[in-house]
Every structure is written in C-alpha cells, then in structure tokens.
Amino acid sequence: MSVFKKIAAVQAALAKQGISKDQTNSFDKYKFRGIDDVYNSLAPIMAEHKLVVIPNVESYTTETFQTSAGKPSIMVRATVRYVLVDAEDDSSTSALVVGEASDRGDKAMNKALSAAYKLMAFQVFCIPTEAESRDSEEESIEHTVKLMGAAEIASLRDWLSKTNTDEAAFCEWQKVKSLETMQLERYAPALAALQRKEQRLSEEYAKQEAMTAESLGNGQ
Image 1: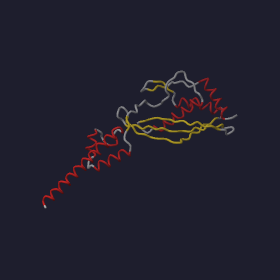
Image 2: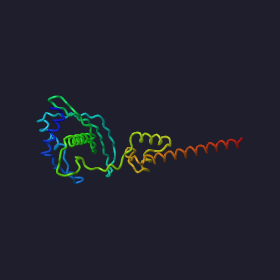
Image 3: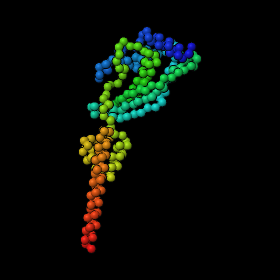
Image 4: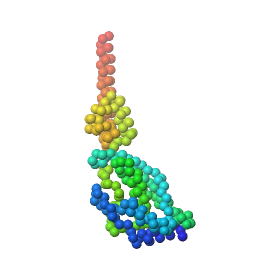
C-alpha cells in the first residue's frame, strides 16, 4: 500500500468521527479545535494505519510589536515541511505549511508550530467539523503597533550623537520610555527632525565662522 492510500484510509476514518470544536477562546468568544484534540484524534488512527508524520522547520521569522494595550509581544512565522511516511513500504510525500502565532511570553514558537501542524492535518486529511469558525489556540491580539528594530534604534542613536542631543530628553519629547519602546511608524518623523536639527546647527556654525572671519578682517 502506498503512502497516498494510507492518507486516504486516515481520511476515511476521520470523515466518520471528525474533530468537534469543544474549546472556547475566552478573548474573542469563538470555538476552536486545540492541538491536543487533533493529536488525540489522529494518533490512534495513524498508528493503526502505520502512517508517520515527521516535521522539519525550514525557516522562521520573529517580530516584536506592541499590542493595542501597549504591551510588548512576539510574533513568530514558521515554515514547516511535514513528511508523511508509510512505515510499511517507506513511500512518502510532504506538505509545506506556514504557522503563525504571537505570545507575550516565550511560547510564540510553540504556538506557531501547533498552528502549522493543525493546518497540515486539516488540509491533508480533510478533517470535518460541525461548524465553521477559526482554529486558533492563542488570544486574539491586535497587531496594529510595531516597534523599531535594532537598525532604526542604532540610526537614531547615531543622529542623537551627531546633533549632541540627550537621549533621555529626546525620549521624553517623543513620549516614550526608551528608544526600544518607540513605535516603528514614528521612526521616519523622528529621524527627519534630527536631520533638520543637524542642518540648523551646520548653518549656525557657518554663520558664526563667517562672522568671526569678518570680525578678524575688520580688525586688520
């Protein structure tokens, strides 16, 4: 039997029982199927048909942002290739999916991998459910505010040094605790302000030099 026949056999078994959405997201009040629900339903059927799934994380990205409540959070996007293997004849196929999740602690990667596995399982095995709704284990977070990255922070610090601007005073003017908590959308205006200040300082210095030279000329 080939791996595709094994996948079809698992599909047939899941078509009879499905996976119901028994869990509730307390933040947005919607039903979803958790990763444990998927594992508990798939594990015995896959074991019976000797079908194995092997995950391989091909790439991932991380991004720091602020929630609508102003709290820092981390977003992870993981690209995972799942290899499905027939344990009896070693035939195999694979499914490439992207899992995305955010967390205010250190669980963003775990959530992203859980999301990727569920997506693979739902699409490969066509797992039915009784009603349509989102399948997410994480709280819904508004990804409306992104923080500056290391490059933007370094750039502003360079211009602060060029213009002899105190960083604490600059942060107070921007109404942020530190450059690390400054929103990305405010980077361009802040940089432009520092560049204008540098231009004014250069013009003032040039005027002073001209006045000094004129004074010395008159003195002769």
